[in-house]
Image (tube, rainbow, N blue to C red; front, side, top):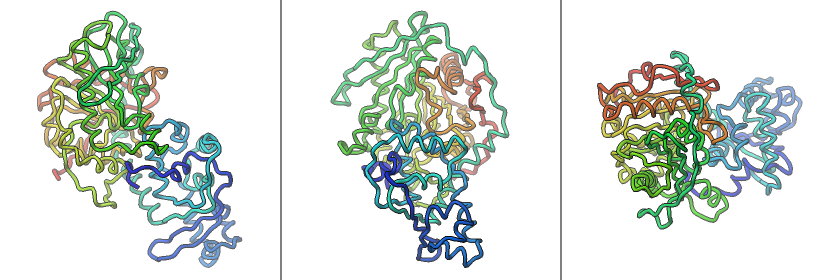
Length: 498
């Protein structure tokens, strides 16, 4: 199911709906043979149940003296490399919720799904189960609604094994490096109270005014500008913690809302009222960022004090972090070992990648958190960038896994351009928990974001990428207590040029 195809309401119920009656029967399609066997969910809980059961699988298990059933149960009870419990907790408003549906729909097909009476019931059930440890595929099966389900066993094994392999390089690099320490000057709020406003500005590339959240220092600002771009189906509110932390240290922060790919669009799409985002959104998002900078330069944002726009730091998460884009790789091989869920999104947007490739010369440094980039960046693309890049990825990101989407591209760029870009990995970070609403105080990346921003502005023109570019990130002090943050750039593997 392509990510940007309208999501069936049947699939939406799969993750959001509590069952009126849980699944009782599952058909397991066996690899290598064109057949399947039925099994009752109750019989999957332990091998003893299969040995005394009457289903097709129970009879097969009995014929193999319990060996087949034991191996199957071990597979179904193994911890999923996907934080289903955490995602369920925020499912009602979660950005990229379609990714969850993709994973489940790729592994399990449900028949006889009933209309959900209360979306919070299944959320609460998965939360309770995840509190006891990692969830397994069997845990998820037990709470799904519907009469029956089918599983393609070879597809389950392949998808989960591939995801584990894609996450392993990040853990290995983190373990080979040293987590950054914590400097209160970076991690604690600054002395300045931020002022939050929302303004609308007229833009030539959209029919409606562009909404921009501004977070500015109430006094004693430094006149420096930072712009934050939210991800697909996300909202500025989920990054106001980043903005407030930077504003408390004197920076003025702009957070444009990208219409057509924000939370409101997602909710309308899931309700069947509007189509999914189209590839033109890739072209419009960078224009939104440039328009916000233009408005700041023109003094039309009602900011407490003027700001300079000749040098700007830009930040983004997920699709908000995907900037200078180039065509690079085929999308057709479904079993490519580097393939992941973000490829569905990237492939759907490749048609407009060339038109969205221009960078704003005022942006001299970038923080890209969990960006889909493997297909959209050619090797050596960093040479054409005006700004230095700090790439941040979580070791448990299952939407944009660090292995193929961060480590491999950065290792290739380090070999081919040596522009002074950096890769920081967050141990235990996933695709959602590195963001921050304002109440979170900036989240786990607050010290890192402030350190990179301070380094970029202090460097001035020297912030531009190049083989002899000075370091923008200090050696230490930008760490966090909740996630180990490690600059793994020196440990990146030496990769041959593709």
